[in-house]
Length: 398
Image (cartoon, rainbow, N blue to C red):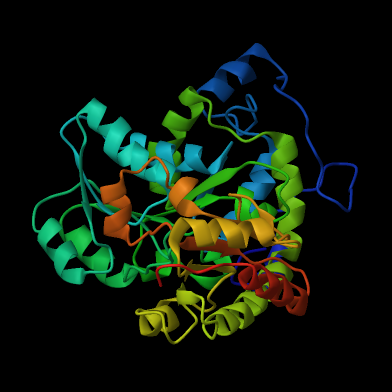
């Protein structure tokens, strides 16, 4: 089966399946660290990549491969490698191709840990990073007027859902000699296809919508076979970033319900965004599907759906935001996202707390912002919970 033969929902049920001799209906879980060989000659050939057999589960595993193949079908990518966490995917996809003297240009609107890799870890190795306003094509043109090795971006971004024009930036990046890496977590592989927009590599934390139930950690790197197998795989093998077979198996089964879950979450998010936009204690909302989003037209152009994440700013700053969060009865306070349960967090003091106040200010992250990951609960219950939580907020200072 190829992605050309079946549509997305079918591929997420059937894609990549590789039954054993037992002809099981559910995909098999291969809980093994290693594999045996028929002969010493076959073992030697396996280590030369000439035998077509599995060698060690740090290199590859039958269950993990099914998960990788199904993700590749979903993304429309030639190849995929799954990692132990989303941050392992981000770091590995960068580190496998960078060396001292290389230059990275990145959108400034990044998850806190990604920001740290680019501004604290890679510079120690002699890699130069330039952060720019990812929403500004003029800034991209200026930054990519000089050669670069990698362009890195999130779109929509964490936590305020800023968008980058992926197609336009990819064209500029390629002219500068750079590969384009897109963290596509907020959009999910269902609602945005960066590879079709010109990106070279797509990265996921599969912990988020792909697992979608707050159980497991995982990540994925997808792109052309020439990158995934020839550039990323040698780094992956030697540095131990592999996902466990059990985690891959659970996420393989989660993919079967991904379209149903994300569609329901997105429907809830859109309704909540509309409701929040009418509340007097809310200064503004950030949701790509809402007409108030400054890049709503771009979202309509490059996304097929607007996702389950939104952000809103409460008048009154941190005190008001904390009052709201502490009054929630149904929605949980958590820094995870993409879960079947609705989760809210205060980015200023959690996910982006390691950034300097100046960096947060550049991103527009205020102490009044709350990021909301909308789940699968009844939307009326979620709105009632937000309503009573906002009612408890005492706004001072406007």
